[in-house]
Image 1 (tube, rainbow, N blue to C red):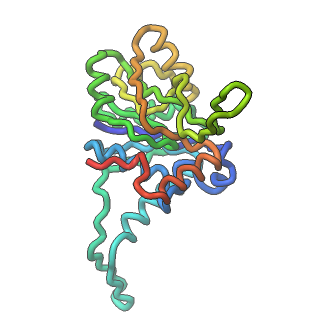
Image 2: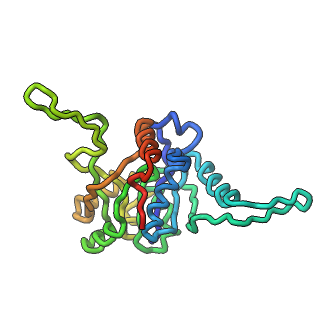
Image 3: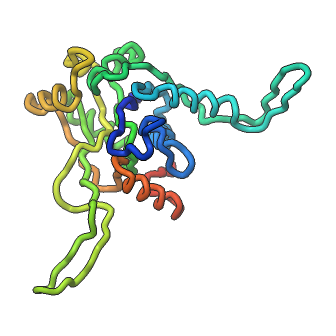
Length: 256
């Protein structure tokens, strides 16, 4: 299935990193978080991507062009002005990089991707969050439910350490990556093509103008994911993800 990645937002809460590049290009372990997201989908066999660009979209294009042209070894003949590439193997993905407008809202960006979706169901996520969610299970769940859309529900990440009490004393201090209460929209959607008909234009907000009415009509299913999920909204989030990468075997890296 084709995968749409929303990668056009300003990333204002991560201004330390996004003044010169869009948030999906902020690096974790020396590679953009966008690369980590695409790699996760590709691990489940979904390797055709439609990336909806907006703010600083040229940075995303440049990265893919340079990765394609500069990976591996090469021989450069300065006299003949030729370049011979030797072992420049890349991931084998098919990536459509679409300019969807500087000020286009999330729904509008999705609608602008429609010509590349062939009228078929498609996957969708945001360009700033990683997870170990099993995409095969999400897709199977969507098909069982038979609704127009499925969203992956996740536990909100803990911003602060947790305190457990024994009377007036603290019995345990915890720094948990997830808390046990409540559910939020974690992205990792499965959408039927009819959802595109609900998007009026560039001004349409996907969450408020599409998902909310779908929920009201009983057409939005929720796959509950209890495992790892983390967005990258702030510098603290980036530092946390970087620490997981540096520790080795980051939880969003799926081995299949």
